[in-house]
Length: 496
Image (cartoon, rainbow, N blue to C red; front, side, top):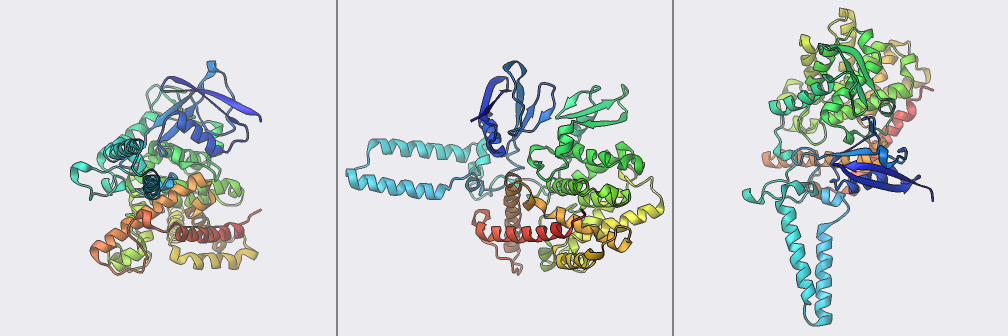
């Protein structure tokens, strides 16, 4: 069997990895993760000798010890990026069943030997010691087992529960600083495959180049969002606006676009699913569909701008509570919008609140007619993401499909079907990218259920005792249902 040998360093330590040329991508990633002694949600970044980030995949070019790749581990924030106590099960081990099995083996040994051997006592002692370590050492919290013993064991797991809903000023400034560091660098310094060019006076020039590998990867539905930090995601979003020629076409100043993207990041909340990474995933899928279906040759640039910006803004200021909750709880949003798509109306309002500020208004150089067309289009697209309207939008699209005409304005308005496809597109991604999002969604549902219980609102949602108690079989049925919805959208949306 033909194999590849890859030489790399981890924290200055030389390592080498050997794997078959037809090895699955996930196995290659696991191999590098093991070499780095990284947790399952730590971010791995592999750099080639030129300093560009490259994908960890079977297609890695073999190298020599003199031209080592460099592997870096960015530890995931144990208080921010993890998925919940059910993570242990997701990692492939069930502590409860293992414990029962050990108890059964202990009883069997006791019956057959007449007494518990000393070696079993020693093993139990080591297991108890290891359990105590897992439950008391916070940097091992990625296992989902950490307990803050100093404050009692009744506290929830240390994931999103410990973060404020809104991003703190310190949190935003930290990401903003990293974003600025990526911009204000020496001429042609390369960072994760992105090349920035700047004048000596540090005024932004028009050049923002991304390595061809990353640029092409960004256009595919297999893009792995988990590899990228928030500041890097902001750069990638800027690349999308740049590569679609929006900056010269609509006279968007780069510094205004960057301020717009920072405000977008700031107004997505610290919740498990409907967060800034979800915003990026939906936008990236929309961006990929624009290229895959060659929409640049079929639609006006202004319509493409509407679709991409709608994707960026579609879940702004989502608090993790769905429309059913908003209406049942008679929240301020439900009262303000008369129970009609309260969340989606709020997302639109926040988007145009950002765009009302001169320093973040990417449409400020457009004519009044252009702005009105964009505003109308963005509102239509974001309101279409309300799943209660799914059948209405899809059936209307199907009805005109046999005579669909890109030059017909009424037909073009139904391009909002694309944002619906993008919004539920996780199921179309590779399993290793899609499945963590399922855990995020379960965690968000569980958080909502906890709040429903505490406030005693009536609810028809069948929620149980905790994230780990959600039935994965039922969830997978929903997964398949959404996959069917997505498939029907994509199947009917065939431009070729």
